Image 1 (cartoon, rainbow, N blue to C red):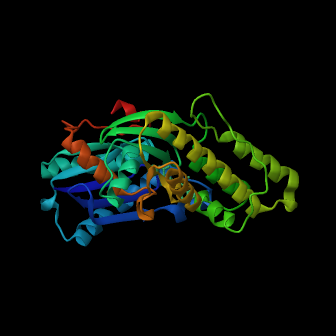
Image 2: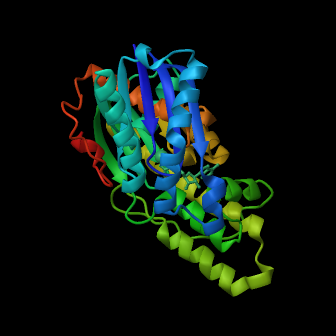
Image 3: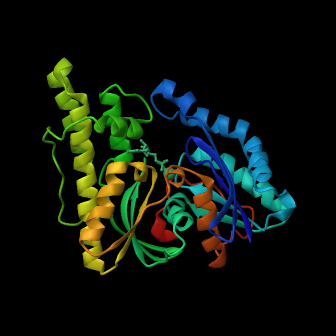
Length: 331
Ligand code: KG4
Ligand code: ZN
């Protein structure tokens, strides 16, 4: 089965061709980072306009690289939320038009289901049930993946998402956008010497706004004496420790032995290594997605689309709309 995947939820216009749910024939990602970095973050209206400008070219390239034509497509899968609603609308409208013109099924995909499915593209052995640690610019969730299309949220952030905290710390340190990779690069030459707060709740929820404020206060207090690389390292260690600690507790509580990492922050080396190390120490198996599938891409959307198609989650008419917020448990 050949699925075309379409992702436009934020600042990446991406289209892929996927065979039988796990084999990537092409995965084109057109990033708008250079446009948005001038503004220090994604400007929603500009993102939508660039998706409109780029999407047809991205489709042509995805088909060319996979060496197929539109007639070879069996199904179209598209991210319909959560995300920037104007940006999502471009992908959803494009997908609806194609599905109508080709008379093939259209599958709406939840963006976070896509991030989790990035692991199916990396490891052919991974099957539910497993625990997913989902860490992106908008989400920090521990999710029980009960089946390919059935999810239960075990814990979530009560304020900022972890990617958002990385981006804000980068801004405080004057590193620019996108912050995650820049903080992570600087952390490699730093020492974990700053004591930063760690939020703990009675359940496994997270909170990252306090640590972000602590970094801001230190920057204001120490000014030119601030050891930026040490702050980056202390911040990175702090958030990675809490993410992994809570995930391991969730695994012990549920008795599930497999854990998968997902979302843009899954590209972080320290987090990847720490999750593998702690999983091993506790007799669990850790699944880590290939770097190319961590940040937003259409291949992960097509893979999640494949499993939704098998489950019969097809958009029955062309009334599908983009949605800024959708709970993954609703699906
Ligand atoms: O999943 P994603 O591409 O978009 C959303 O769905 O939000 O995640 C983007 C987030 C950004 O906050 C970015 O700073 C963060 O992922 N990120 C990283 C790294 N690479 C991307 N954070 C920490 N370390 C990285 N290496
Ligand atoms: Zn994402």
